[in-house]
Length: 193
Figure (cartoon, rainbow, N blue to C red):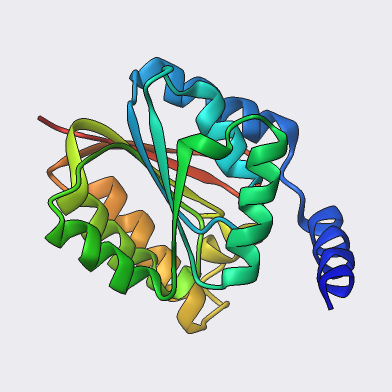
């Protein structure tokens, strides 16, 4: 079963792999921000986690949320191989429940990366704003959805929620933001403080 999962993941990753430029951009954004505490919503295989931790200061830490235990284990294995296994904590299960738990624990983050189920991006943004320190960066991946968000003939829940997320990122009075047309679109917002 484990080898089947790995084979599926490798095929999936080869098809949808992020360009190295996006990984380098994530690392650079973390370095520029001076983040010490990062929240990642959606771990999958650990690629973005590795890129995020590379930008952290030595005392920094990554908290990563992942729906499925097998993806969290795979991500952790990959972070261990990269030398960062001791700098990450995983929460598994529905991200919104994990976000509520983090809020109850009064956790705060300097950098939040959203790359999970697109239908919940607006909800993840609400939670992120509550968990963000002043000056934190909130970054959403895949925000252009292969151009579907600006093709208004394309109507489905996923695309509508991505449009709502982008609109909120652009117009929320607590954020300064921009969308970069790299990969499938990267939205970057700085929480005003």
